[in-house]
Image (cartoon, rainbow over all chains, first blue to last red; front, side, top):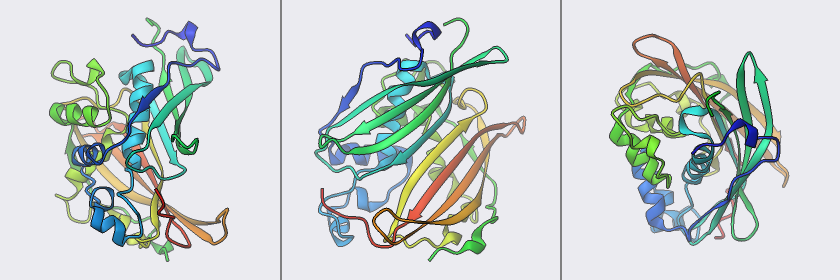
Length: 141
Length: 152
């Protein structure tokens, strides 16, 4: 069930989602699916040689989970924009919490749209990534 | 040091087939169990699915102009990524024609000192049958003045 227009006033939210502790398997499964096989995200030897203590989390992996959270709320067919900015790295063992709320909503030429702000926070309290998404809200919903 | 002369460089167009099995795999990898990604013959693709151009651009030499920017890979990071859809995201069964171009290269002073260099590449996705613009991806890469900190 996707959210209805009446429920989507500014400040409206939906339950947070927690994922993790993240594993190397999460990174590898995402990399295989996406086609980005950069070894810094799964090859311990390569990551150490690059100056990291462990494989670096894949930014597009948790961005994808942020998008999953948003499409579960507002409907996969309804997304019109998704923009993510990474703030700090993520590591194996991290527990990430995804939260978000309606920042704005508009009705123009009969089309209803909501703008949603999404935050991905590490267990340290550090913000791993922030995203903005725009969804249309169909009349029937 | 980034090459500002790369601005305006355009890659060769390449085709990408949006496939149901790939959508299912990608949805699972991004921890989705949404039925919309699994249902029927023509499921819609997830918001960040167009990143799977990795599998298609390599078949077309010269399709990806990103290397012309020459960001140092040791100091380079993916800073920002945006997808814009001019309707529902493409469904399985859609053939897209994709074309990338370097939109800008610019500099900013970093918060912790040092100069940051940003580069932006835009990829347009058109329906191969109708020619209509379906989506755009905008990737921003950054080169820091020193390698990022590596403490988990």
